[in-house]
Length: 272
Image (cartoon, rainbow, N blue to C red):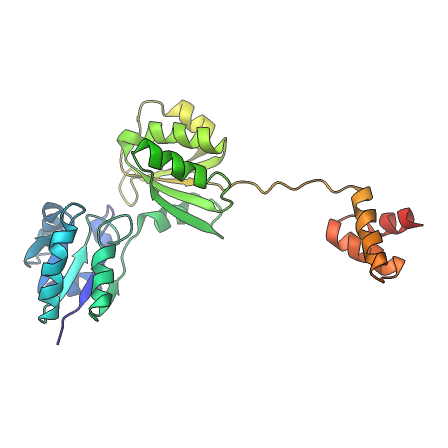
């Protein structure tokens, strides 16, 4: 009988956010696959957990995958963690999770802090609909393509960024999207946690030299839907089309008013 893969969230700053269930899962597993074993070891030491660690990060994940899958198929339980937050969200893990599903291995979620959802919740930005965009590529061509794709995105957009690349990213976003409202959320769950609500234009002026510290989440408002102004003449033409299709003048004026937002009485009067 195979073991299980436990996709486990770890604190994004405050160790007190590590859940009792996550601690229990780590204590009971057979081994831990970690993005950076040095970072995870500090977490284990803090909670007095002693378990074997296997490194699983961006540049060795293909080689490690077969080894981890083999051990789980042989009955071992594996906990998958990244340095902070939920694994497989802009961090290594997606391929391993997918491989487990393909091999019929149970994948269990041990939820924990997630930076993009935490940042959105405290930003005050529109969260009815949003899109998580992760990190912008450092490759010019890919970066340009990504920015071109989101130019007309109407949903709130969420990005991750490292402090040493912030100014460069703010300038690129401003050039691609124009001036938009933005929340710069940094140092989540730490002592210096901060939400800076501003605009892209102002942010470019205020932070020209990467002078903000800590891991950063950028939350940017979506494009405004441009509404073309409907004239009375447009509404009358609509009504005439309805009349041509067999509607009475009264019903045509009423329907055209509903379509255009103009007053039924004005449309009706213009039809006389």
